[in-house]
Length: 142
Image 1 (cartoon, rainbow, N blue to C red):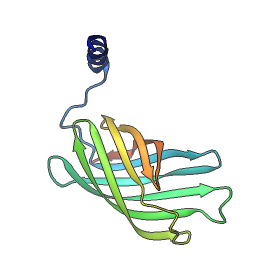
Image 2 (image 1 turned 120 degrees about the vertical axis):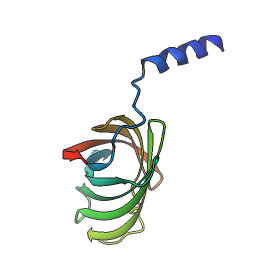
Image 3 (image 1 turned 45 degrees about the horizontal axis):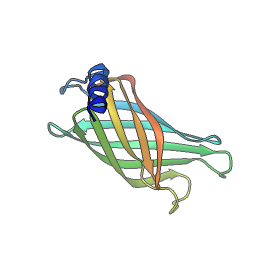
Image 4 (image 1 turned 90 degrees about the horizontal axis):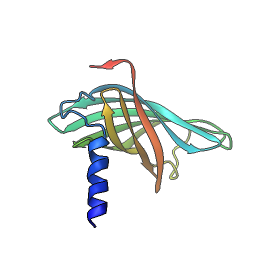
């Protein structure tokens, strides 16, 4: 037990810390590794509503070789920060391209804030948890 605690504390001291006032509001691009024959990514905008909450919108594009067309889906989102963790929960607003399908679930993310220009973590959608990354779009800090 003591060895585990010492190892945990050592790793915690090595982990990068994120300032509580890190500005994550603004424009982002994101991507996730969903499968070998599919690409997934898009853009997002986060707007701060209070000390730990954000609203936003994202547009996700999913392209798979075995689907007849690409999906382009607009979603409204809410996000909350706890420490250096960001939880993004979305709801589908519109299928811009592709047909509405019970198999396309909202795209939710659980991310670790590394800096004002990079977050990494997971896409949580349709029962899957897949590696994901958010990066600042050009001129994204608002």
